[in-house]
Image (cartoon, rainbow, N blue to C red):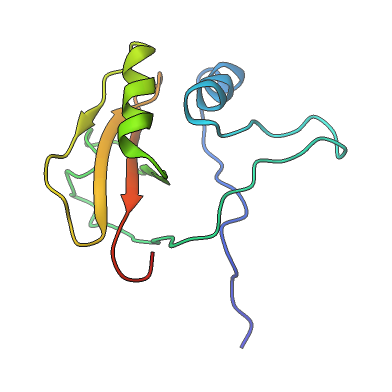
Length: 124
């Protein structure tokens, strides 16, 4: 059986698409879509990816009308948090260390929730 081999893109609506793309590039290193085929595209490192539908009434994403949340793998959670905070971005670090790693939470300029995950443990 044929199967999906990975995430090929994430597409979502934004009030200021160019500004939001620049924010993700500046603060998280997620490059915007190239303007031509000769430019490089952001390429993620291989690693675990969770695909998890949540119940309609979940509070995990924050706002009741929020339909999605980004979770980005990072190689140095403390360094990323330090850099974001130095840029004036509020970041909440979960004090608990889970069997699968450590987590932090922030929001982009349009209020979309972002979870940062430093994987640890088996399979990472």
